Length: 169
Image 1 (cartoon, one colour):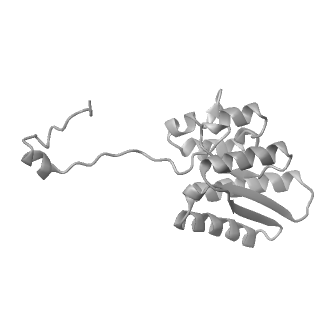
Image 2 (tube, rainbow, N blue to C red; image 1 turned 30 degrees about the vertical axis):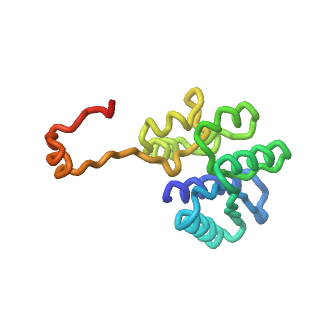
Image 3 (cartoon, rainbow, N blue to C red; image 1 turned 60 degrees about the horizontal axis):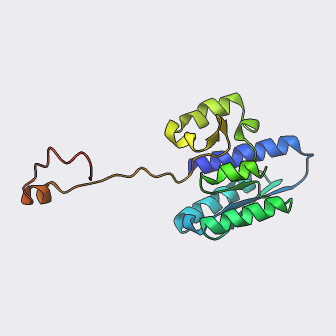
């Protein structure tokens, strides 16, 4: 969640520096799959940032499933009213870049941000957030599949739990 907070702050600072001094409202779409306590945390980050920066309001908007969120984002983009940020599937960056609906983070972040923030992500997570080395997405809610096994159940099945199978094939 800290990455979301940093992303919101970075984007807000960039937009504030590029616009005249006046109240700014930024929309942030995210899918229901990010619901529950994660959604509450995202809302709290947005509210906390807005409380610390009274001229900036971040409007966190539930936008349905990932598919619904992508459709809503693309529709808003084509209508000239895209949200400042959105949680979408990493694969979406390719067609959204082709549709000129996303802006590279490289244009928004300082060299220090790229080195210290983006550089802190596991490199494989960044690979599908980039096109030709240009960062269009920031990893969010990534998972690392893990397989646990019960050593007692292995023994009961006649297997050596200290030498488990190396593949599932």
